[in-house]
Structure formats: C-alpha cells, structure tokens
Length: 134
Image (cartoon, rainbow, N blue to C red; front, side):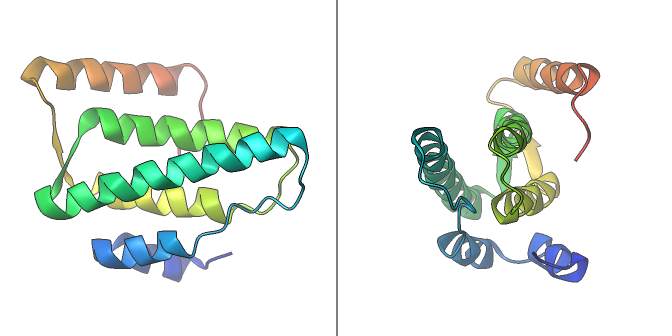
C-alpha cells in the first residue's frame, strides 16, 4: 500500500511515470476460482483500456468528460467486485484513484458542446444515487 505522500507525488507525476506504474501493477487476487478468474480478466481489460487512454492523453493533454465519468464508475464497480470476493488488498483500486486525481487536473473536453452538460448530469446522478465520493 502506498503512503499519502507517494499517492500525491504520483498524481503530480508525468504520464510516462503513470504508465510505468501500470506495467508493474498487480490485480491483488490470490484465489483461482471461476469467479475470480473472471474478475482477473476484467481487471486486465481495465488496465489495457486505461493504458491506451493514457497514451492518448499524453498527446492531447486533455480528456473527454465521458472518460472521466467512466473512470469514476469503474472505480466504484471494482470496489464492489473486490468486496463481493472478499479481496482486502486494494493496490489496483488505489492506483485507479490516483489516476482519477491526475485526470481531475486535466482539461475536460466534450466531443459535442452539449455532451458535456449530459455527462455532468450523469455524474450528478451517480453521486446522488448513493455512491460515496472518492
């Protein structure tokens, strides 16, 4: 588990450092049951998608509002999955939260100007429907 200082420094780090961190990131799952295998695959897919998006962010230095909201939802769903399987090690989730903090410092874009209003409306709905804040 990383200390607050390490988390803060990662949130301020360059995207290349974040990418290197993702390469060494473990899924924290020790069991090998059928359901945990599905979760391992899901986490692997999340990792691949996040790495691809980070590579795009390096070039643009801005993110789409929909990706920001999708990252928030991914963290919440992953926490639920970890709770459901009794997984206490949360390095993967902590890393996603650091990534979320880093994304929050980027310039937000919407593909279409009215999309941003809709995306923030979705975020408001996520928060109002009982999900805890990061």
